[in-house]
Image (cartoon, rainbow, N blue to C red; front, side, top):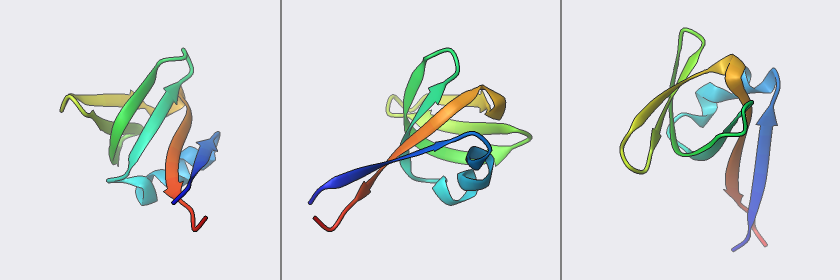
Length: 75
């Protein structure tokens, strides 16, 4: 099975976060830092994000450049 990357940026981030909760994703910040893990919930203009070391990050939505997810494709 192949995978297809989905990139979410700009105003679509705030709209997409509720549907992305619980999924694996990479979060790219405006300063170039990248975190990979599980997206948590949206609270007060922040996103809770747990990496695979089980450390929870709290990221302000205005600091997120893009969110990248892998979707399994049919080919």
